[in-house]
Length: 187
Image (cartoon, rainbow, N blue to C red):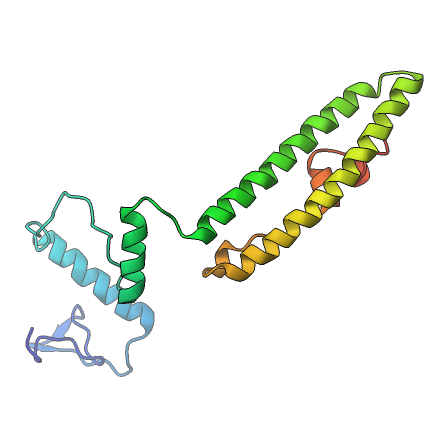
């Protein structure tokens, strides 16, 4: 494209012409006007078939190279990929998420058992209450342990959006439907 063919900031390509000369703009284009101009030019080029015979048309994109990736990271990531390995922080994060889900499933199952035991009478009901309180104490220790691992993992993550939030036992108990977060209202 020659220098004369390029639109200048004070010209509007699609504006009406006065005679044979494009009308001059009195103010520079704003961001939205530039985006509109670019979209208009792309649409026009597509309508004229400019994108019909591009190499690789109809084939999947090859996203093996990332333009902002340094050469040493590219080599390291290629070695990991070629050997079916993942960075340790990804494996640690997956393992930690699996343990959190296992804890939540156990808590839900235990809460359902406890709710079923509420109909029991006398000493059996008291046994369910003691068992529930023992489970809550055990979960407190597990949540503390998981939170230490979450903090350790978050420190090692290269991508801040991948951080995990610390667990709170009262929120986890409310998640399973334990009233007041402790299950006392049923026991």
